[in-house]
Every structure is written in structure tokens, then in C-alpha cells.
Length: 245
Image (tube, rainbow, N blue to C red; front, top):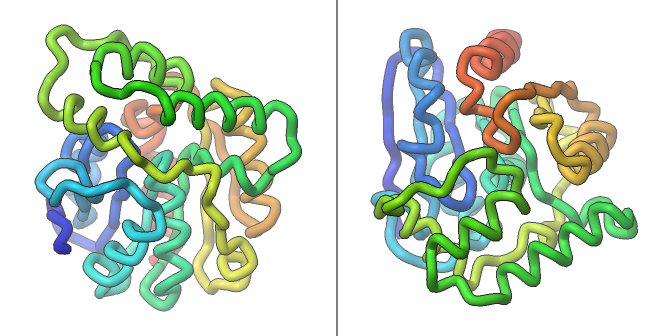
């Protein structure tokens, strides 16, 4: 299976891995100003954008991205489910990673036993096991659960309809066994970012940062959609990328 990869700009390579609903083109629209100095590569994960249909699985996606997109040295950035994919991809090909940035990874499994995160993970699993055939009902349940501070569009555009279909059968993010020890030993620096809106993301991000020895930052204003803050996130990210050049 070949992933479609959107490419913009010129300069050092930055691979951007999107989350569960929007594909690469839409998820990273606020990062386009970076194209003046960086080459942005945004793969559409399985079931999104122009890539083939299929069930979302962080292990499968990480293998595809490691093989097909990390074929040259690059900075690696992941959002939400894509942050889990990015961490797994980085562990697969650490020699190709200059820096790693993960934004709001929903990796509940790494803090198993935390009551707040366990309850949230259980709610997410109930959502994924429920009916997912009506996009508006899907978003009505998913947006507050994930922390998406946006109204549900009416009508729902096809991009989001496909994103809703891609939730069917998705491997729960709480199942991810993150390679934290390998990431801690890697030569590249790591940045962990959250939006300061839900305690679950903060608990998970703190645990990842502590285990890996990562820099930890919060960018408020857009809930889970941290990259959509635009300039605040871009300035943080670009400053971090420059340290890896």
C-alpha cells in the first residue's frame, strides 16, 4: 500500500502526521507559512485523503511512514493519533529523525491505573464500539471527548465524512505500547506539546516527557487542535526545529 504524501515549500524536510479525522492537507493548513523555509511533507494515513481505504492502526501506519516517508533525514511531527504513529515511526528509523514533536498523543496505556485517564479511555472505547454511521452524531460525541472546540459543520463536507468512516474498526489509541525507552536513548531531541484543555492529555504528555527526557510545552487557544493556533504553535515548532539543524 502506498500512502499519498502532500508536499509544499523548500528547505529541510518536516514530516507532519495527522490525527483521526482530517487528512494531511487539511490537518496542517495553519502550518503553510513555514513553507518559506521548510519542505513540509504531510502523508495521508490509511483511510484518509488520497490514500487507500483501510482500518486505522498505529502499528501499520508507523511502518508505512517509516518505510515510505522517512527515506531521508527529516524532522517528525505528529498530532493526536498521528503522534502515536510518529513515536513508533521514530523508533523504527531513529537514524532518519532529526527532531520529534508530538502533540496531544492519546496514549492512555502508558499511564494505566490513573483513574482520570482510565475513565476517559473507557469512554473513548465505548464511543468506538458504538454506532458510527451518522457523521453528525459521530462528531457530536467525538468533539467534546477529544476536545475539539468547533461547531459541527452543516452540511458535513466529504473530507470529514471520510474521516468519520475511518473511525470504524480503528485500533484504540490506548492499546499503543510506546517505545519510550528507545526514544529516551535516541540521539534526536523530543518536544511534547498539549493544549491545556483536558487533564487526560496533560497527564499522558507529562509521563511521556518524563520518560523520554523531552521538552514540555503548552499552547492554549484551540483545545486539541493545537496546530490550528497558527503563529503560536508555528513559532514554538520552528524554534525547536532550528535546534535540530
